[in-house]
Every structure is written in C-alpha cells, then in structure tokens.
Length: 257
Image 1 (cartoon, rainbow, N blue to C red):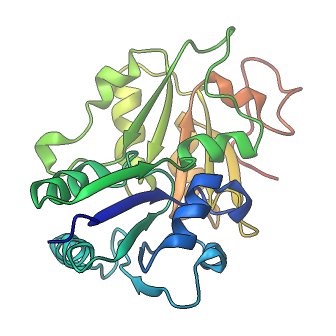
Image 2 (cartoon, rainbow, N blue to C red):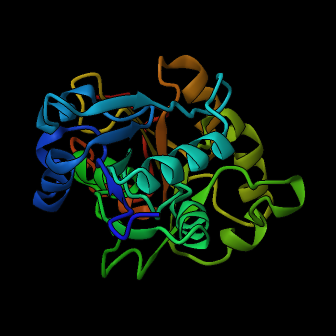
C-alpha cells in the first residue's frame, strides 16, 4: 500500500456552490477520484480537474441507493492505488452524513483520513428564512436530530425532547411528520408552537412554509413541500421572514413566502 493513501471526507454544504469552504474547493481540485452523493449540487464539480473520475454514489431515503459497503470498499481501493480520493457529501460529513462510519472503516484499512467540514442544511435552512437557532428570549440551545433511527428501538424519544424547551432541528422527518407531531404533542409540546419546514435550502428551488405544531401534518399535506427538507420547531421560528409582526401567541396555519 502506498504511503500516500488518503481520503478526504468533504462537506459540499446545503446546495449553493458559493457556500463551499476554500478548503473544500482545494480538495476537490486536487482529487483524482470523487465519490459524489446524490444531494450534492453538480455545479460544485466545476472545481474538479478535467482528468478526475466522477463516481455517483447516490444515497437517499426511499430510493435506490448505492450500498454503503460498496462505497467504503471503493474508497479504500482507490486510495491504496495511490489516488487522491474525495468523498463529497451534502452538508457536513459528520452531521448525519455517515462520516464517522466511513472514517472508522478507512482507518481500519490503514488509510489516512481528513475531514473537511461543510455547512449543514440544519444551519443553512433556518438561516435562509431569517430563523436563528438560538435566541436569548426564546431558546438557549438547539438539538439536531434525525426523524428516524437506524432501528425502531433507536428512534428519538420525542416525548423527552418535547420537555427540553430547546429548538428542535429535524433532518429526514417529512415522511414521519404525523408520528413526530403526535409524539411531541403527547409529550407536552404546545400545539401553538411555531414550526418551519424548508425544502432544498439555498437552491433556486427552495420552498418553505410556516405553521404550528398542531397543524403540521395538515399544512404539509396541503403544500407542495416534500423531501429533502429540514423541520424547525420552536419559538425562534417567530423570527422568520414575513413573520416578525405576528402576535406572540398566534401563527397562520400555513404561510408560503
């Protein structure tokens, strides 16, 4: 095995190519092989050299996906062949990107790994509509959580989360929004709690709605919004664009803007 064997786990950010870090651009430009996730904006590949081999390795819930084991074997093989390998992921590799798993497999094979962070959609999506995740008046912290666990037993404890009083930022939650809504309400979260759902954040196709927890399922069903989306639950949603003048105790059932 060559001593130069190395893989870069690179975050491509939420979609807008202008949100790439300079370090990510440099890694992409140096790569001989780039393994590209499904949600990565193709415009980002303009930074790749013409000789680079681009390998789509799409992974998206509910769709045909490239097996994770195949991706890991391919990264190892290409690195051991002496190639500069970039694993290009939407958002951040270590934020629901399976970067930790890939790092472990690569290191177990003797491959050096460098993580290059990207802006996660959990940060970019609320920011794109003016919503801060923390606010001195409304929330002293935020919880980033997936809408579903690896197994039913590892699913989030929504009742416990309802009691925290912190902003909830939910990835991959649209398909299970009715279940999440019911569990949060059962856990004591007020039905009037503001909610924002943002689809395709930072891209031209971005769409969003503002609703309440009590109306979340109905509002989503009446909208055109689907996956991939970020769901933000908490009083910080009152800061959303065009929501500043709303009374502190009410929000419209759904608002597109």
